[in-house]
Amino acid sequence: MRIVHSIVELRQQLANAEHPAFVPTMGNLHAGHIALITQAKPLGDCTVASIFVNRLQFLPHEDFDSYPRTWDSDCEKLQAAGCDVLFAPREHDLYPEPQTFKVHTDPALADLLEGHFRPGFFTGVSTVVMKLFMAVFAGKAQGTAVFGKKDYQQLMVIRQMVRQFALPIEIASGETRRSADGLALSSRNGYLSEAERAEALHLSLTLRELGRDALAAANAIEAHLPALEAKAMETLSRRGWQPDYLTVRRRSDLQLPHAGDALVVLGAAKIGATRLIDNLEV
Ligand code: PAF
Image (cartoon, rainbow, N blue to C red):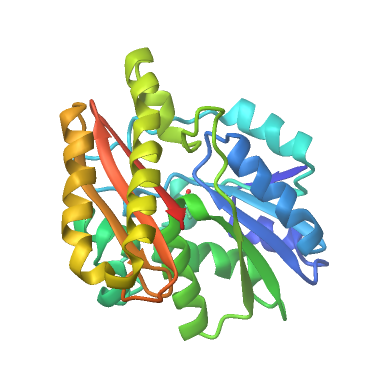
């Protein structure tokens, strides 16, 4: 695996690639990331991963400084997974000057849910992803990028960005990987104490129950949804969580669902100081 830090080196490394397959990450790689690399490999002629903890997508009170950075084990895992090129820009490689040009996201999608609780998050994500896409795919007739469904709304925002800017990039999605008890794998799980880790599976259990309730009420979902969501919020609150949202949305645009819509259940909640997110298509 070649490791490069600057955009110039990356472009030299990819000069002969006709169709790169790209997995952007912030590092601290777990089995979920590695599954995305495995998925990407047959989708292109050169598999590229990036590791960059993107300051633009963290709010001032969030964990940018303490976000886990595990360079050596990340490199070993990528190498073992058969990644061809690792792009690991330093801050000044990607942001040599303050990044004042940003991707302006669509509020109808990006200001809901995660965007509501983390204002500016999707602007930060979209801006860095656009920049990473330009670094990896510029001059290529086609490319593929793989994003996990664990960050369901992020995947939708990136798909909308690619569609509206007519980027010649296929966006593939990878299923969420879970530990045996159902907890979605996440870099932030590493922040959990033993007791919090044992409790953490209740986020996916509560979402599952909300999904079952939503399906049972699917014919009149608009009428029943407020009570179903309140029940789920109450369940987690009583267990000591601080839920931001536990909701059922239609899959196509994350708006409130109507009878007959395909549904996704999404949630974000804090256990102790750690904020976890999860979702399930039902
Ligand atoms: O999902 C992530 O890890 C990040 O949001 C991404 C897509 C790498 C952009 O920083």
